[in-house]
Image (cartoon, rainbow, N blue to C red; front, side, top):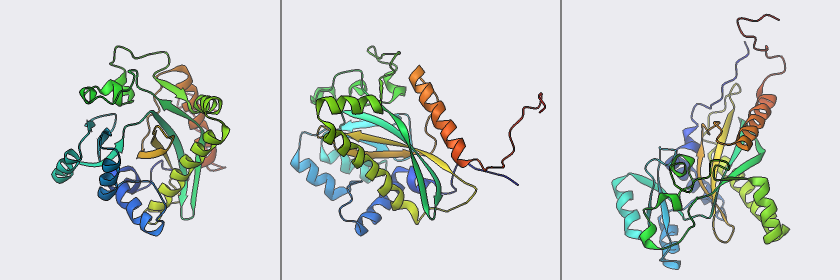
Length: 270
């Protein structure tokens, strides 16, 4: 019997934010140089270094911008951590982007990065003024939030293709800088998967396409925000639709067994 399933049994080890951080912390003990996730000591050091920084707080088990809020004081992080409501924080970002990574085996680890990706932007120009902390249209790139803003562009959907972003960076920052960003993002993919590899159940009939949300700071340093087990395949623009159709086609080309029977609708015959 030919069966393929598009999720692994315990994918929460990677896609639930608090479990992902737990696994990455354990992995970091083995690789001290990995710079993937932040703990309490790291947050304290970062606040000391830049006390005026703005941070985004995300719930561990929600998506589409639900439950996110923004803070600028260390005491606010401690309060929410104590209450057990928030577990992950990141510095304010300049570019938001999403990438797709297909895993077809955990032991051995076999993964594919899709060559296309997209970058999300806020429609309102960013400022670090404390009076703008409540302006989600300035700080959060989620389409589910941005689409309600007065400045939202329905034609572009607030997105750039990753290819266009790289062209822009090569023209304005140089090829070496753009390539370093690509290499750093690839490193995040590899280390995050290795961090959960031993915890994952390897089922040969399963595969999974993970949607990576990564933010990039002013120094073009990428930070892992979260990994989604069911990345959105709905399209808001024509280019978005083309990219996601290519993604689905490529996934099926890889995961479908060679002799898997072709689907034929009931009202048709071969």
